[in-house]
Image (cartoon, rainbow, N blue to C red; front, side, top):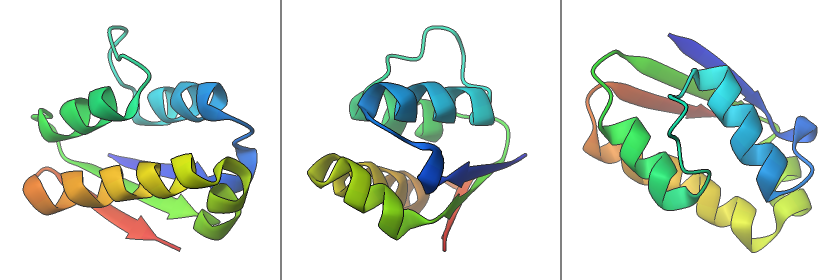
Length: 88
């Protein structure tokens, strides 16, 4: 599955987690925080590729949280064979 995340569509932490949950079809129990994001990405059985577009805009909108979000994605991709990440 390919999920395209457009950094320009994110306004705050709440919209970030709602958007990624919808795009990646995360389960209802997804916890809407970075720890839950890491867990749901690394526990996947099905392959998932996230293409993060406009990453710089995302970082500007969310400041430090945007950086932490991207680091979480990178850490999950490095430790899980079923998840890949492309940052544009």
